[in-house]
Image (cartoon, rainbow, N blue to C red):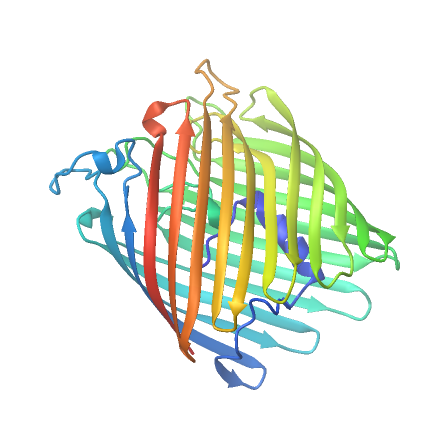
Length: 414
């Protein structure tokens, strides 16, 4: 099911979507499915899954900790049953189209019943292009979940009841045969559940984000563009206390290279600098990067890599800022028509800057790896299984943990 990526990645995803409106990836393509209503395709599905989680509370003790089922926090491993119905839809018109998804999930824990929860979300994207060189992409998505925000899916690696709503948009115009300008924007509202119970030992802080940017793509060769991109960000943070301002601003300027008209390789790689001013504190300056690439190596093999770095308000410390570095890679192999396999690795580093106050800054690192296989049993039924390992390191020992998850499921899709 969809997991919203961090806001700083969403802008790059929208811009990339302007160049490829309908993904043509034969390696992962499935047989044509769904109910057809003229240009509308509706494809409902249900996932039934069993998962074993060695550390459902992300505790430092992990499976070696508390074994008491009646305790406020049971640190032993647990089994989880999940049901996840949803529906995908696409509509293709004349020079425009829509795609969307809505889903619901319920997790039922065997021992840690206090973690039983509903989660749900939806997304919708609209695109339009014209022969005159205009291209428009608009998108929105919503998520409500208590599950871990996996960095393998572009998340922040945080576990907490939360809601997130995003609007994204990008408008591009071919100024000439060699030059394209793209204006992009984003609005995001992220909020976490907080309380004084043992379930939430420490608060987390969300924010509202407003971002606007402009990118120029200049043709270098028949297959490559020079990219120059600038953006402005404004945050209104939930974490302001002590009479300090809840607003912060940031500026980013980057340059790099991007693919132009390649069938097998699609990439964007930029590097530059960002300035960030949080709650009237010292201005932070640092190098930042943005990377997104896909390579269809053969009919059976494909690879991808993505990453970014950016400043943001700290989600764990009030009145503070953080710089985040992310990098992930994936390899998909389809040895036969009915079987596909995938291996993903991801890394995330978050350095709290502590621009206000005298508390020593902390650094957290998360490493994650996941392997998965999908086999189509019959036309409407696919069986899948996977293994995932995650390890978090921190200057604060209480925030360190590791865990593994093993899952087995059935996907029913029409």
